[in-house]
Image 1 (cartoon, rainbow, N blue to C red):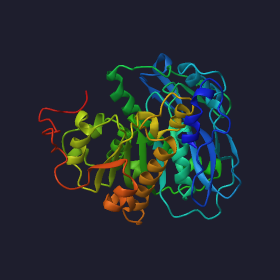
Image 2: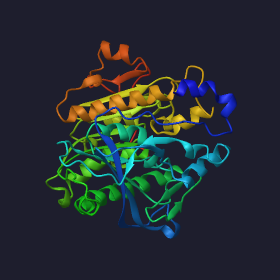
Image 3: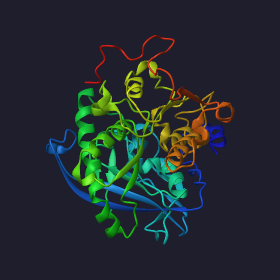
Image 4: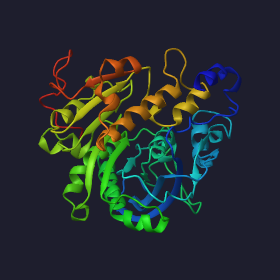
Length: 397
């Protein structure tokens, strides 16, 4: 699909691409979705007007047998933000479709799988635009819960139509804001965990309230690494089991960046980077890896992948000639890699073995665009460039 669209770039660069759809998920279930607004106050919020916010947008994606028609899924206001940034005509980005069933009936008998919590990147895109990855996990039987913080993303829309316009797509925040943002993100995530029984009852969606696994992109990935040690110390998370955590392309800030044993999450962890995130430019990754006592691996995508390619933006950008071409990996291949490696990580957590995360010769022949930078053995700090874990390094400040 993506290769065909790239051939049409010259024709459709400024006009809507007809028939642009996310590749459907491959599992036996369709994807249902329901939103929920969680009342939660954040004081000293560095993003919100007047430095205070009072709610979080939660979305629950769950398996269903109800029909899931192809339909538009990106809010018009969010599509407009990206159309303005990329200088595209209106209704270009918003025309992409995906197979999703809003307010569908959940399964009568849910699979015995952990609830997955997804944490989006800082400053966009919001969780809504990670549907390509999330839908595959749901189609395999997982329930995925995302949460978005108002004013962080370029645009959010609540179920009642209330919209929250944040910073523009090209906003370049001061690095000093990252740690405070991750701190309130961790508090947001804890609030969502505490509210899950209420959310389950209100939405009439059965949830696994005892077993969880976490993943996130960018700053959300950093928060996913920091969250588990935090939950172990919270009385309201006693009785919860956290099986593993994953960081998609995020420099590690805050708690998980500590260059000491407090960075140990004590469960399997996977770090998955794009082409523009080589480990020798980001010592936070090998430093995190050296303190892990559990299963820990790092994989790196080639093919000129960039930071937002874990989201659905890759399909839109390649379709309109904003990205792709040459030896860049096509969008459908990038999504296949993301779905496969992310899916096999969560499968490993429930006893299905490492799958492609073995990283053996067979895997590398099937996925030559994935390099295992750290395969769980040896010193993660050692490299041809010398010691990646600088002796004086104490984490991003």
